Image (cartoon, rainbow, N blue to C red; front, side):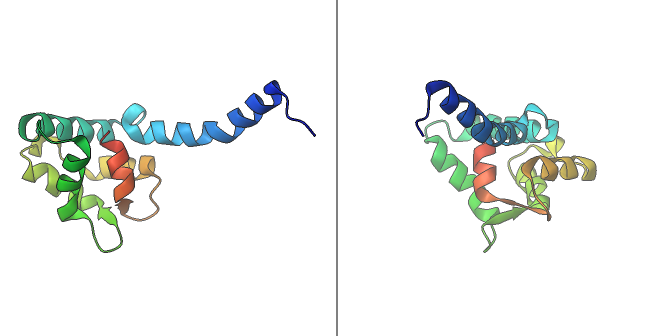
Amino acid sequence: MFATPSYSRILASRVLVPRVVGLRMFSGVNCEPAERFRTALMSYRDANYSREIPSRFKKEVLRPYVGENGALQIEDINAMLKNIGHEEDCLSEKEQTEFLAAAGSTNRSIEASKMMELME
């Protein structure tokens, strides 16, 4: 069976769409707390890491909070915000729950790789 161009497009759209939608949701389009966190980090980066490449900034900021399992606890997000001088952006319990749901977390932790995606 040969794949026609239109068949390939339909197949690709069915396979790729769910992944893109999930990524967009966590990137802040549908999650205000995630967007507020991202904005606070970008503000901190502009002020303190402007000469560093983005990947180094991400690693430097996340390193102290990543556990042995390669994930951050949701409580560490508020600690991070306090440490960088953005206490006003700390998340309430309700916002933490929304953040975790947008990240697709089933426990109170978020994989470091997902946090790095958010910081892009």
